[in-house]
Image (cartoon, rainbow, N blue to C red):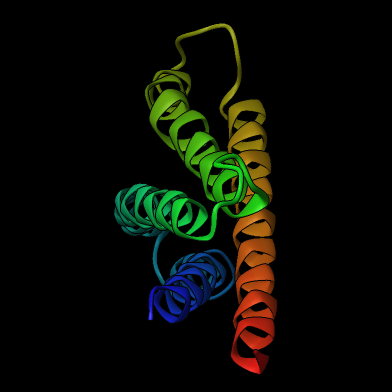
Length: 147
C-alpha cells in the first residue's frame, strides 16, 4: 500500500511541476498584462514550492520506512531523489526569491535575468529528479507486484 501511495504521490508531483512550468505560467503571460501575469505566476510558484516541500518530505519519510521494513540501506535513490528535489525547492525558490525581488527593484549584484536563469535551472533539475523518482517508483511497484 505504501509503495502505491509513493508511486501516486511522485507522479502527481511530477504532473504538478510540468503543469505549472509548461501550461500555467506560459498561459498567464500569453493572456494577461505582464505585471498581472507576473503576480499570478509568482503565486503559482509559491504554492508549488509549498506543495513540493510537503511532497518531498512525505516521500523521504516513506523511503525511510520502506527501507527499514525491507532491511535496505536508508540512503537509497528513493530517498535521495526527493531529498535533492527538496534542496532544489529551498535553493531555487526560498533562497532566490528575496534576491529576485531585490533585483527587480534594481538592488543587489545580480540582474533579474541572471537570477531567473538560476531559478529556472533549479526548477529543471527538480523536475528531472521528481520524474526519475516517479519512473523508479513505477518500476519498483511493477516488480514488487510480480512477486
